[in-house]
Length: 141
Image (cartoon, rainbow, N blue to C red; front, top):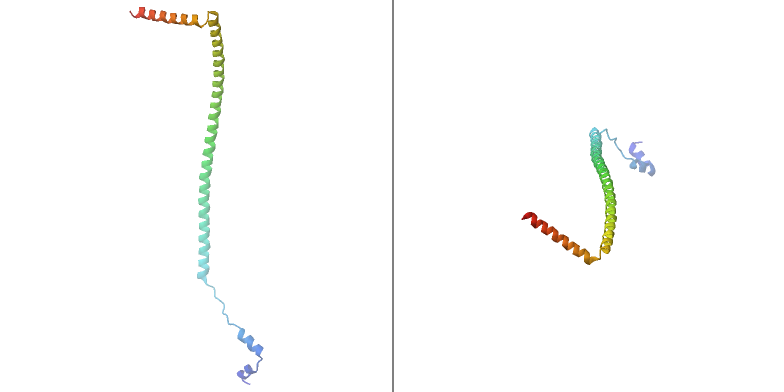
């Protein structure tokens, strides 16, 4: 029997199996595509390394800025402490001056009261001014 007669006598299942078989050929090793993949990967690695380096430089600058701000804030803190001390001293001096002024004012009021009141005080004050003017006229003439 010939091959064609055998093919005709073959069962329809075998015919279907034979027709469903595909003849694929194995793809050979393509060195260009692998080389391109390696280049792409290397390029991506270089980009990532560059980005990391750029980020490290940015972080270094940020660290320097933070250190400068820290030193500046410490200086401001010390200056504020010194100024607070000066303000406290000035407040104490002002309280002392106020209490002294209150005491002098009270003594002056008592003196005016003892000397006969405001009327006599103004007379004494006016006479004292006249004496000072007369002395100046005598000295300059």
